[in-house]
Image (cartoon, rainbow, N blue to C red; front, side, top):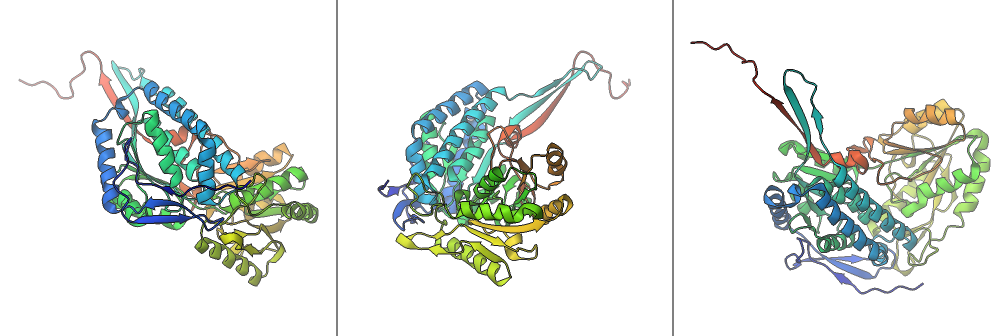
Length: 494
């Protein structure tokens, strides 16, 4: 199917009205076609500060934090309904800006709707605690209050999904939010924010300021009026944000890079494991922080497994991202395309063997990398240790479970891991030993809005989604009261 869209022009989103005039523009060219698809305002530090002032006023003096959970939930449900009605257009925007295949983008928008609906439910059922068994006429209440103004920095690989993993949860808790999306993929955040205003999100409660990390992201992270920063992106940038937070002692949550292990034991269902292993690394053209890029395969089945893996990998369709049967899209930018190509060369020069792929395609102005499988990969190699963020799978073999666990944990990262086995005992003995925030068993990159997500080690800290993700956006307050006449602390004299 051929698809043609007009170039979209945006200003910042500061509520039901539009933001100030765009000034200097950032032009977004599709990484799949080279066509100009959008123009975004190149925000300044003053733009970010203006949004923060609005968010601070909306939190301190506005109605949103003081609404009942039922009222906030009603807005979030209406918002979910508007997204549902607009899914196809929003998916096409993701395709244009990210370069991912359309059926993947449609799946993303399905997940966005689910995330908003679940956040609405959390807004209703949020509650504190009462302690009436303290004795002596004493009682206490533990409240969960909104943390305040939240700054959110959203990456380019899943712009709509990660917006939905953060924003509705924060709003459900009663926070106000300022979002800085990636300069590559700002359209999703702006379009979703516009639908939020239509659903009834009050002015100032949600703002989107587009632009570069410096100055826009920097202004958000360093502002004394921002109480909490939620960041998803690279480990290098995450470390800088955590370091900067020391000056203001603001809370931060960082979901960072990964180099996830994908362990296949000899008793696994071969076809399921092949299919899941492909999905875990080639989904979203490998631009996925929890991708299972390190395939750890037991010796006894390695040759047979790899033979089938290669057969299947060679059938993947790379190219026309607007075609319903396309499997692998384009790299986000020329710079990232070059970076992935550099890793392909590193793998070859360090002694790994290319079993399939390894090529590139710049046809029609796009930045396409073939799905690639490396064998004979040693833990010392860069392609084993470093996050490539492209459709590149590296294969390392092991003899026994102890070696598999050691290889899986031999990484600075700890975002996710996958295990393929039909042995119930193996699954439940191995999973707790894997140093990762999420472990999938006989599935991969498979979750739901109720399930918390986040990392160990250099993959960050804090959680998104689930009850834990909701609680990230709350403060705990204890209130202690004594009923009736109490005993005096000091004796009465005179």
